[in-house]
Length: 474
Image 1 (cartoon, rainbow, N blue to C red):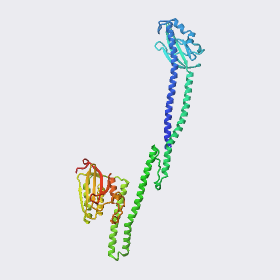
Image 2: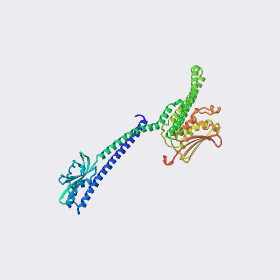
Image 3: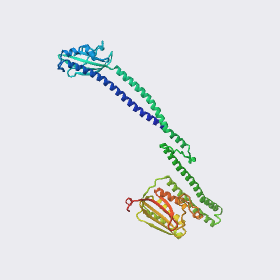
Image 4: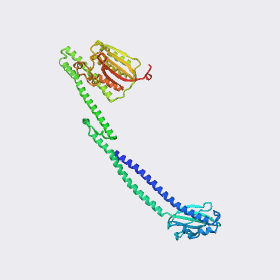
């Protein structure tokens, strides 16, 4: 019973069978009740006819009155036979239970006396079994002047009970047949419902990491299975894209890591051969190794940060003043800007708060400034912090050569270094702007590149702004 199809079929069949059994039981009991009610009504009607005849034979008639005419009427077997029928029997007893008269269809059978009848309890009903069959009996106590008699009216219910038994057998056979049909139908319906899922599962199993370009193409099915297959195709597309990014990342990382490692290895070999002979070679090789090691460390750190962002790790966040973070990032990059003669300015609006992690946001802003300083030969780099509705915005504007339109979306890809020889000549890991995009996404924001109004580039980080009433006033 590990199969979902089996469980669904079993539950469906079980539910229908329980409902069928309940309905059958109710129908059987209702039929029995109706048939017995009809038998009782015939007995009651015959007793009422006898009482009416007794009352009419001698007026006034009531319990405690009456006379010999009523007594003679009741003890006349011919009268009793006229009130009887093939299934209705009548017997008259004295008050002490001695039979006085009975209908001819009773033959030698005598209805047993009823106990406990008197003027206080004049009527009783019972069911008895006699040689002529099972009888439904109504007993009634009459006072006829000085005489007291008991009238028994009985209805044979053998045929009724046979009809009930036959009906129950028929219902039982019908229920068994219906149960078998329900089980078969449940299995068939479950198969119809779950066979597409099995085919879908088989198709999914056939798709491995090397065949992510395959699609199920079940979108023509206008039902839940079709929507599930369509969702799986979408998942495959995202997985294919993710695998492609991973392969590209590994390829790019291998290429980018090879350069500093090769340089470090070459300089280490130079040190082994000529380092102890030539102090200039010794110093130059050590400086190169230090510089390449620093770049390698920066690259590895960036890759680790990107990997952490890709995993979606939980990052603790708190309310932060975006202007203060920008000021710290600007101060950290002033030396590099000054070394190139660039004017690095900050224009920060007060009261712009975001929910975030301070180190990451500071690094994102610093990366934008560092990128702007690298690609700006002369002029200025301006950092602006402002709010716009429910968004907090950080803009870094430089007076450099700008970014071609076709490259503005690509510059945030990992290891992208641009197409021009000038861009590739500028040192860097190719991860700075990719890190900015990952940090922005972690903070439910985005980063875009545009052209600055006066030439150069404008890179903008947009983040959800934190309302002032939720910030720490200190």
